[in-house]
Length: 273
Image (cartoon, rainbow, N blue to C red):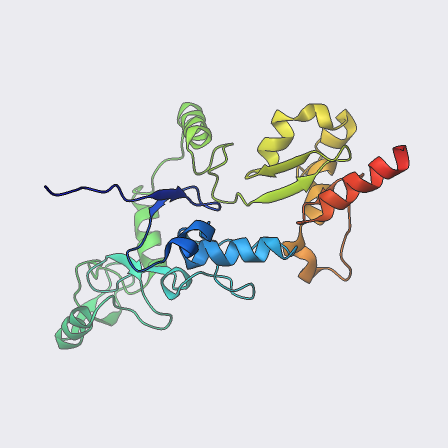
């Protein structure tokens, strides 16, 4: 009779994913393992040393493998561009115009045609491709042609503008949610030693307005951010490089570092005793 054994699993201490026991690991090493892979293991060791939390990749949101790196991989570092031949949007290296070798070959084999601009009447060289039609010699001639004939699209009405703004506020990418495209991880300690691990700072200020005064949450006429937002943003360690000196805290709020909270609680307990 074949005995079926269940593979033991654990939950990663960093990302929270379930991972199973590899076949080539001993039981003693499996008992000490806390993370699913090398990336989460590096983050756990980094946090246990009492240093700053690892920055996240601005493209995909994953933690970068080294603290001096900005992106986690070469694919995230390469921006998305439009191919000059097929029109596909993909990651194209800086200085290149085509997404693949076939598009570059097709563009080089296409003969150059001599055409006459429909607006100014000048002769210009044009290489046929699936994107442009080759009616004008420049973008300014095309814009003037459309403007004189009333082909320019009409501006949005008030109803269309209101619908567009409402759609942007409902979107998880541009709306007031933790999934906003500019959201970052924040590790804060309040003056009462409460720890907060948040993703969107502006959303946190709206939801926990009881922790701040009305003057700190009031927006200035320029609309660049309230006093609470600018003060908490100044203590982030990611911005220390652009400052002449590091900001230790703002009105009792500090950045959450490993071991600092334990030391502050012990100090308050000793002073009270």
